[in-house]
Length: 206
Length: 64
Image (cartoon, rainbow over all chains, first blue to last red; front, side):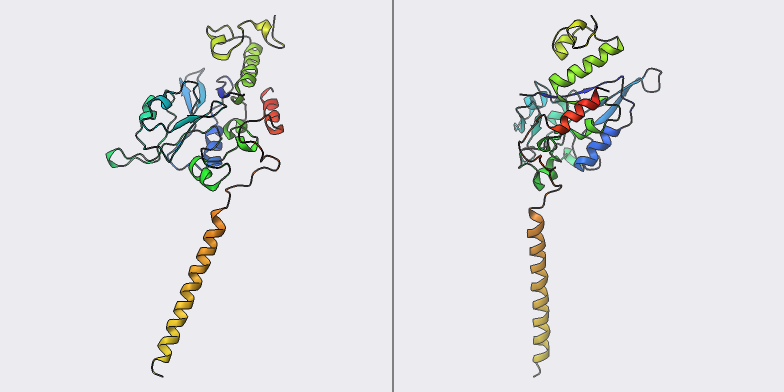
């Protein structure tokens, strides 16, 4: 079974916000809610880097652990989704998430937030596939259409990669090896699997 | 005779009201099952990720 993941290649991201726009447009995300956004490190300084951030669909998701109504669930492909009918808008998931992924559509008196909204990896929600109800609550279900998330497909420089973890880590690793730096970073094999040796990569340097 | 005119007016208003309600009900029924966007042809089977032609094409573009 494939395990779906995002990787953002900071060396390629040109901060065009195409991924952010694609997401908002595809799912008709309301004003004030950003399922995906760009974070720039050392903005304005030579050598600045940008990465596209959304829900990273964690393997051991902290949002799932803290939700008092247990509205989160994980699909067979490792995608973390939630049921808006169960969500009480408490905001615990927002405090638990290291990426700031959970979004809330309202900011009213007495902590009123509304139902939480976040990236669904373009795979809808618990409603019937392609139903009007699914689209209204969670957006379009591209995965069921045989596609990948709109943000990654829209990315002009292909900095944002989405898909089966096995496939995209190989693509990313090939890029790093081609650049000739970065692959030696400690923990590479833990993060992306496989071996740290360049020779183990198909077409990699010996 | 004196009541004939107001009665026909009431009937007209009643008929118009019922007609409007009927049209509204028909529109509501028609739009209830409407999908936001039609699914891609040939992409209706399966509910999750699969290595479709579209996905394979995407993987190819990332290797540039």
